[in-house]
Length: 132
Image (cartoon, rainbow, N blue to C red; front, side, top):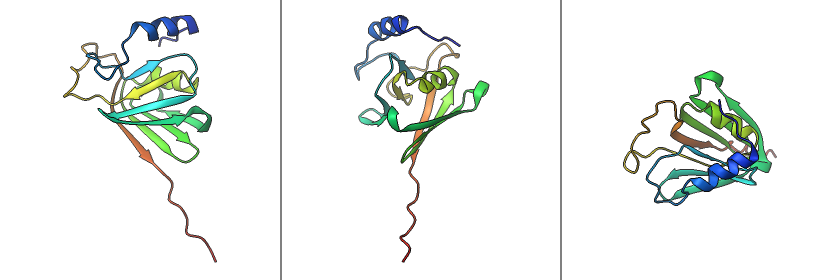
């Protein structure tokens, strides 16, 4: 698992394109400590959540197939493969965005050790009806 120093993160971030027209898929963008994380669900469907409201990062460890992010009002579930490094960066609030792989937009990464996100879903708690 690769952990980057702040200088290495800055160099990596500056070296990678971040526009919506990227030709190479990246499951996530490591970065310096961030105030928000953006979830790129589809080509034009983005949601951002504040790291201030992130209470817990749950991961399946070495399997690297699932990550759960428990925010104040939402649970975000990330599914894919090779997500161990992403989980570590999320714990440090050092991820700028995560994005779902879209086969119509990118080729599958040739390196099968690279992270690939197959789905991101949101669960918002059911509100209890007010008691009289």
